[in-house]
Length: 151
Length: 146
Image (tube, rainbow over all chains, first blue to last red; front, top):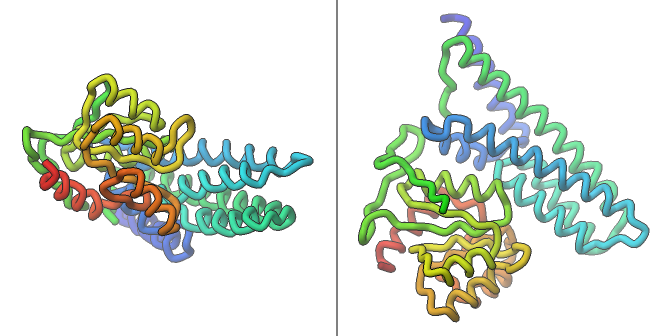
């Protein structure tokens, strides 16, 4: 029993840190509240969609920014999509990085866009890693016979 | 047709999802969005409120459904979509005489863009993703609408 309590404590502490450090915002709580017996894996499913979508968009962005003649509207469209999907799951820092990126697209600043792409990639890698750790901790709690503390 | 239906009554500890009985039973909602994440989130959210949902990926698919005499009480219409965007689809639906409640959803924050979308024939416009409070107010408006 102590083992479960300790795992739950670690999970709560880790989850809290994700909000405190700005990786996640309230939208992630909304997703967790939508999960129930009829959609038991809802959060993991939606986050997996986000990972697939983001990887695709980041690849498209890298390709677009390598082109001789940069199409800023196309770049902006991809960043807009990534901003949308990151805000949908509450990935606040990725969303913020996308907002900055769009500002550089608007003024057609190539160097700014390249730096922003790197920034977005970094933030995406971080939140991906954090979420994967979160899900692992949740699985450990469940495997030990515990329940996930509600947000 | 792929309709998702929520449980007959839902009142979870975490959320406050109530099934609202409308005129003639469950309200039906068409979710029109090219973003699979938003489609999934909105579908599950609306199903929890007891709404019957159907999803399509762009405005043309929405217009085609109504043209084939499939009606919905409410349409959640994304603004930017390939093939046919939200404003164009909304204009077409209104021109066809569709008087369902059409709610625009947009990730654009600019008031001018929302106003322009409203001008296409929306009843309301909100930023996405929708929250449970907004869905509650939409259902209340649906009840009044019908």
